[in-house]
Length: 202
Image (cartoon, rainbow, N blue to C red; front, top):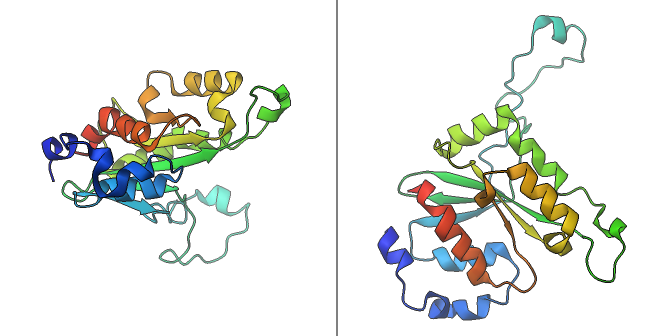
């Protein structure tokens, strides 16, 4: 199914039981249902990046100073494990994704409620090495977009400090994250992907 057909579905939230999925908070279920019958596929816990580090060649000066056992380069799983990946099976382009659920400072809670660090762990995605690997493996070379998408869930999506913090980190790449707030539905999640990210997989 091409872009025109996918975007132009009549009452797409009504089809295939998708209306019921609006109440779901499971990203996996939402996208699997939405991509059914299209060229898109949702991978849970993709393994494309499972072995990024084992093949890194360190200088001899470093190897002499560290523990240096023999490494099975084919089977050593030293890498990263995204929560999901969206692949266009025709173009073979892949958008890797993370789901960050975290508490936050909202009505009735103290500011300390937002002390979690799940959101901070996503910062590794901005490192030069991982950006390069994500682009090479996923095929998203367009510099107008980052090669990953982060979906936030939980009270962090309404936390006044964390919203500003995340917005500052992403800067002009605001389309690469989505605050899936409690009053939103599956439709909001899908529309963000359709409007801001899907074209980079085509």
